[in-house]
Image (cartoon, rainbow, N blue to C red; front, side, top):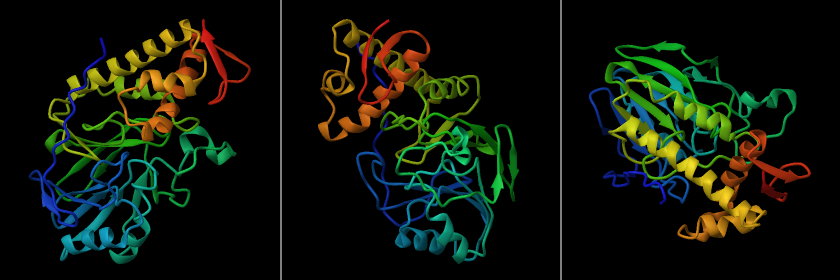
Length: 302
């Protein structure tokens, strides 16, 4: 029986409007809806007066101007980047120019957690221009005016993915690591399933009471939601193992079987996550591969 994830998808909002969603948190949503972003990128603002902005979003000047308009009379002191996909970090540059050049904080450039600075290639679609002014690591604390944020390194979706925990509200900004409306795409080589599963596990003992993903509504029962996420990934690996036992060894043949209830337009992205699972399964001796593992390789049961 397939794992049922208790998705939360309903969200009442207005594009371009800055909405107060908790005592310390506001949000404005970019008009970039898609099958990967749901309604669009949610840019979060922490604090009042001297504020932090989390994930300024895509290079969309209407969205940037909405952030600026919503913060009239206030000062941005920190820009926090969960990761460097094109719907999260590119608006950092124009926002900095318009708001007095506040420093940006992040794990590093796109792919930095996988050695891109040493020349390793990463997937297309990353913001290759972003370099944080301040590099942060797991456990680092960022303090602002009336708020405190803990950095939680959660590689998997990307190697430089960081969640930010607002201690005053026991709230975790989860970027694309955990989303209430959908599972997360893991796309090798920068995306890594083994890292992702470990990053999910480190969330379980935390005392966060609410998750605020960059896409979609809040998750109000976070630990149980993460448990369902983990169980879902184990279920996907069981489905892959079943395909292999049935002699289905190519990803292009597995995806229609495993994702028969998913819009076929999303099958290419699903194939990337199947590849991530297979790489993990080969590494741990639960699957075999003819030649080097990759998207076009033929796999078999171990």
